[in-house]
View 1 (cartoon, rainbow, N blue to C red):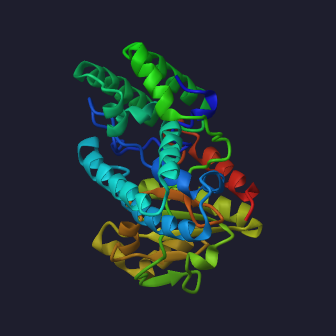
View 2 (cartoon, rainbow, N blue to C red):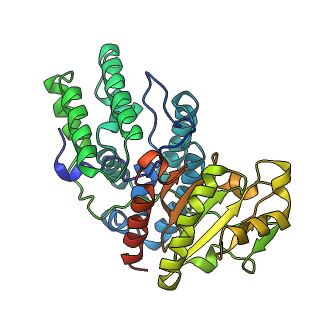
View 3 (tube, rainbow, N blue to C red):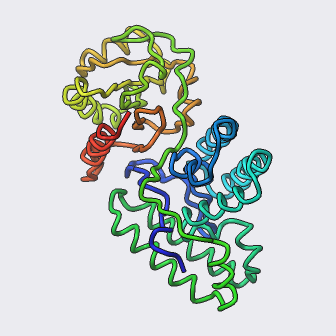
Length: 355
């Protein structure tokens, strides 16, 4: 059905195994993937060149993408019945906006690249459903296959690319069994020439600026703009959370290992209880935990909300250009999970990328 170069499946989101429920799963209904290729591909220079976008169009497209990817990011942990309608509305907003700036050919090729980038998840797209004239029985079968595919992926540890490719291949084979020859031919026509995704990386959304920070500990006020060119580790915690406490030694280790190599670690303390709102207590607990990197006190949850964060602890990796690339919810090494190692490997990989 798809050339190997067409298969990207959503790239490498790190989701930790934690004591809270796993977000985004709704039995019986596939969910719109977030991050999504509709925005990711437009953040990639090779796609921009392929579409022959000039400087004026690039600026216009960047503005459209930034608005939509921020809205999609906020939906990433919602169940499918809440996520999908809002996500499709945002995707529609982007499509309409792009139609005002791209030629008919550019729009067609953009959609082909997006569908290729989605892999088997393209069958969630209403336009694919319409163009292939999928019957109710076909839609129901495909929905079951895709839900199973997504659920298996969300429950497994990321970084296992061979397993991800195997799961995608299995889902592809199952879907092919219900497509008739005419539909398979139409699908190949819709996808167009294969695009090489080897240089397309996951960029989830542009990390927001810090706002309404009551106090900075261990540093003068910082901005994300000041951190551009560095790999940034952002972690949300509260000092009374035992799961957070168990992660703090890992962040201290990263600080010792990477501070001189261009990695900025920033803690955001968002209190859970009224007692945790006391700044001096945050400062004291930080000293006891050996925290030497900057900590932003987010008593009003302004930054928590800007990131769409929902759990303690959470840690995000931001690349040199200021885009969120990977994240992990919960304890890094919960019940033997190799989270610390995987995130450390991701930091190393981001450091090797050009500025």
